[in-house]
Amino acid sequence: MAFDVIKEVDVAVIGSGPAGLTAAIYAHKSGAREVVLLEREEELGGILKQCIHNGFGLEQFKQDYTGPEYAERLIKELEKTGVQCFLNTLVTDLSSERVITALSPEHGGLEITAKSIVLAMGCRERTRPSIGIPGTRPAGIFTAGVAQRFVNIDGYLPGKKTVILGSGDIGLIMARRLTLEGARVIGVYEIMNYPGGLKRNVVQCLNDFDIPLYLSHTVTEIKGKERVEAVVISRVDSDLRPLKGSEYLVKCDTLLLSVGLIPENELSKKAGVELSADTKGPITTETMETSVPGIFTCGNVSTVFDLVDYVAQTGAAAGASATRYASGSLSPSRQSVDVVAGENVRLVFPQRYGFQDDLVLLIRAAEPVETPVTVEVTPPGSRLNRPYARPNEMLRVKIPREKLTHVKQPIRVSIREK
Ligand SMILES: Cc1cc2nc3c(=O)[nH]c(=O)nc-3n(C[C@H](O)[C@H](O)[C@H](O)COP(=O)(O)OP(=O)(O)OC[C@H]3O[C@@H](n4cnc5c(N)ncnc54)[C@H](O)[C@@H]3O)c2cc1C
Image 1 (cartoon, helix red, strand yellow):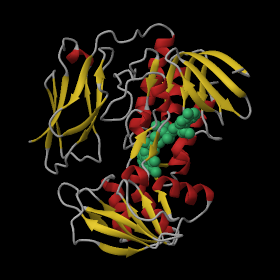
Image 2 (image 1 turned 90 degrees about the vertical axis):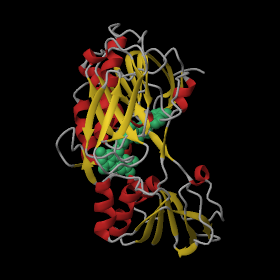
Image 3 (image 1 turned 45 degrees about the horizontal axis):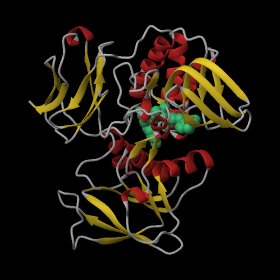
Image 4 (image 1 turned 90 degrees about the horizontal axis):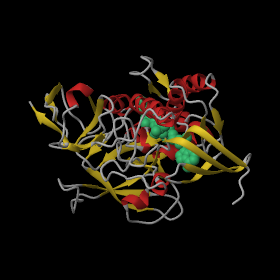
């Protein structure tokens, strides 16, 4: 292939959501000479552009921003750096030698060789085929994020009478959004016996609008020829199997799916990056280094985070590490130990400790515990108390580097009732 643009840079960041924007800003702040940011959409900001609700940046900026406001703050900061942004630019290939191939209507084919690369491609939503709901295939079935884009960016209402399957944050936020736009949300149906999204979203998006949340329920069939006409709802047992005889019909014209997000790692796989079976993102050290030297990761492509603040923290770490690697001051971690999930831990991020920095762990509980818990990290034997542990709210624990210098065996993270 003949390329119209051939470039060599210090750091290339793929994706311009809060993770990529923060990574590019920190790569520049840390002294990288040439940084490029590649984004397939026509504007910077990633998913934040369509999140017009507030609740962004509470930890990081101590401000209650909407998604676009939060993005704008980062974009303004980026504009001061001289980082070159390639918009409408789809990265189609990435090699382990850090060669990026991309396509854009403005620039044609691009080949960018970078001393280090930051993966910040975010995640995508699980769809109907990925959860296999039987029934007909009528119009009116949307993922919650697509519906959000229709309403908030394109100005379309997906339907008038909606059932929402799954109580992830996007589903909860869309329940409120559709209600405010005059549609009726009949209910949110969740297969687990606890909500998938943050408690504040259950209160502010459902309870405040009298929208019922049905736990331990799922959609077992979709009915309708041209357009959705109804769904069959069933209760589920403790193994999440639909209970025979519990089915009932709910008439609706729209079904929204909020049934999980999958990190977008097609490019990571092409570069030979090792992925975690738990997070579905790259196996990462505390410096956000992947298994391929010079390739770093941050944000939702690494693991699905609850809060944009955590996304930005990983972006800052990845940007700074990418610059250190590009300048030769960060050698790939030769020595590392695994960080593994112990009792009542579904996943832990990062999954490896490379003895370069403090270890900041983000931990997702397997089962909710509503009484005080102890988060145990062994070695070094740190115990931290928390008032509760919920699968929908990551726990954050920081272990200083000095405490980890002599560690030889895997670091196990457990959550125990006090
Ligand atoms: C609906 C919704 C509501 C949320 N509400 C809140 C909230 O109230 N408070 C809060 O703190 N957090 C909230 N979050 C979480 C937070 O906004 C996200 O976790 C965060 O925006 C993820 O950032 P990211 O940069 O990792 O990914 P994204 O924002 O998804 O950005 C990824 C970018 O990469 C680009 N990209 C992907 N592949 C390629 C490629 N091959 N070539 C070029 N570009 C590519 C994409 O186009 C995209 O712009 C919400 C998330 C969602 C989805």
